[in-house]
Image 1 (cartoon, rainbow, N blue to C red):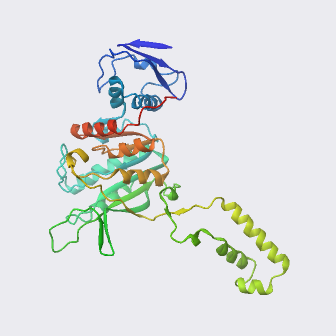
Image 2 (cartoon, one colour; image 1 turned 90 degrees about the vertical axis):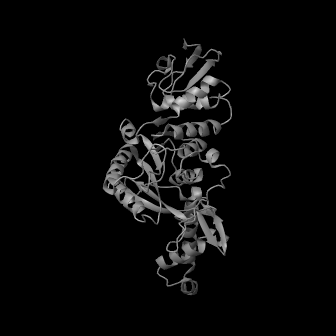
Image 3 (cartoon, one colour; image 1 turned 180 degrees about the vertical axis):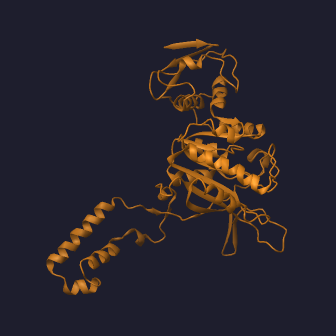
Amino acid sequence: MNHTGCGIAWKAIGSARGRVRVSRYPPNYGKLTRQGLDLPAKECAPKGVEFESLAFRQNLRLLCSRRFRHDWAEQIYKYLMPIIHQDCLAGMKTLDAESIDICVTSPPYNLDIKYGAYQDAKPREEYLSWLSEIFEQVSRVLKPSGHFFLNMGYSNVDPWVGMDVANVARQHMTLQNNFVWAKSIAIDNVQIGHYKPINSQRFANPTWEHLFHFTKTGSVPCAKNAIGVPYADQGNLDKSSRWRGKLIKKMGYKNKRAFDASASPSEFEELELALARKIEAQGEISQVHCPGNIWFIPYETIVDRSSQRGTHPATFPVELVKRAIKFSNSSGVLLDPFMGTGTSAVAAQELGLDWIGFDVDPQYIEYAESRLTSNSPPATKVV
């Protein structure tokens, strides 16, 4: 049925999936605010789907992201992103338990970095205690199969801070993988990537950061080959020789030479049948392999910092978040408690995930919204 209010007519489709479609687009669309929608939105929700439910918000957001030729759609989209101007600890307490598929974040490093609205210089114990409360909430809202990627910078000023923070997270979850995010690397006298040089005769330039991967059990399956690299030697794709050797030993022979010299015709036949079954069970051979736990992801060259990174002093690249999403084979909803300028949300948007984030700085949120709006998918048919 149709619901009309404030110049907007909505057609709600009764479906548990919560799909909605706009039935007409009058120019007088009424007032929209970040605090709420001045239209009968609650009455638009399909039967059995609450207006504030994730299913309804996801599909309404998808609709609006494809209808930016209408001003009201952009405003609703911003309302539904959502990146919420709120302390993340208070905000996460309002989220349902086991409702988040992946959390990717980079908390303040407590190195007196000059953020806009946050003072990055707490006493050490206070800082770690605060993060412990946050990580407890992350664990609560993560699904049993969820993933938590925690980025911490490395600093010669406080070389232990990353590991201390990881030890706090360890109280609530299990470390499944320990990645190194390499921002710059020197190979054969060639420097690739970007880093911030330091004026010191004691310390090397820091060119990497921590990326800790936590799960609730430490045994959640991942899609390693989703970020795989091609084999340098195509011979590695053929495992039949290795399997043949193992099967020969299982049949009681020391090696292939001994088998060829002494095996009976029936044993040769048995070996070939066993090998054929193993090859069939393997299925399609992957052309790539896991690249390991050092991820080389350089920053893009910065031409205009304010337009490319905003005023945030410590950002990470979109590709880092995208790689975490792909490696963990995550879909559904991404959470970033310290959303900052929206990098995690941009990665989620590009890979088709929903997202929710918090930040205490309205300027960062405004910049994040502008990134997401400009990064929205082109207009296409709504199904």
